[in-house]
Length: 234
View (cartoon, rainbow, N blue to C red):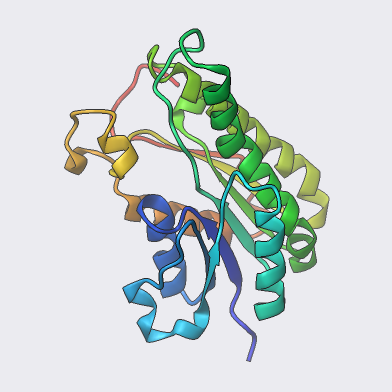
């Protein structure tokens, strides 16, 4: 019997990451959950042997290498990575401090880059490795002054996804920037008075991510935008 595919998901303790992990698990994947404080989710009780936990820190340079090594020792393969961990700082590029801007770029850009690099050889060995970078519609347009510094980091994250797509294409690696608008997560709920019911649900975004990583190599998607509201453009 062929072993099930393996996906690593960062920021898997809640929100989009948690929903993606459960969606892939329910579809038969083995999932490794990157969390600051690893806790086995309730839904894993049906098949705990298909869930791996790792104490992942997006700001720690060696963390993704250690994570990839641990998964390879446990399961011997990596087929997909979902770089979901991210932060926001609601300041303009004039008001934000050097330290805060560095933190945004460290978590939202350098973190996913290091994550993909740590898993790169294993993804190539798969022949159909997948990299999902959680971008944002804020990486497609700057909608407000308070979201502008966050947008800078997310523009870079979207660019990273395109760079990875070109870098790994001949090795069968496909990279996609998933760019949602407001998603009903703790982070989004703290930024607006919009009802969570009116936002894209994490479970629906997880369905999109599953679809993207299960597409064949011949159906490469560079960007996938999802929104809960009509905008003039992005």
